[in-house]
Length: 209
Picture (cartoon, rainbow, N blue to C red):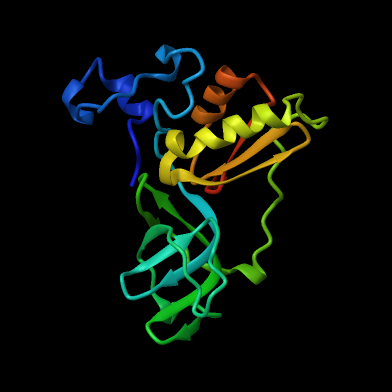
């Protein structure tokens, strides 16, 4: 699922237990990456506790997945996302069904290992979910990058972030990028590559507590 996937935790622990993380294909720590190529040179470590994600849970017969990005407006809808462990349609309200497909919009809390979200709490129907609004991590007055500069950055994101890239939009002189999960690793790398305030990384999965 991931491209060039090596976590910060593996890299930090490599000096102690080199074999525990396997042999990386090509990445290096962001601090050692060539100038301008920190973003995507390593993956954030999985969160240490519970996270919550909001989106469409869809099961087309291959197992339930939490779709954090776009959903095709077909009937039934189509999307791909994070596999869910411990999901039971019998225990939730608000599900819709069409031949071979079951779906609904929920807030899902659980532990994320980088691939699968294992539920630790009952899901909440998204229409009834009222979380605290996340704080804006970026400067309030926008960025200073040109449209051409932002377009060039945006074009390279799929190669750098792979399937963890959910969306990217330009606004007020900066590029806002939503990814499945970031603990600050990718935000720091983006600041190194493009300058602070040019690219804002927003994590779709948010830590609880």
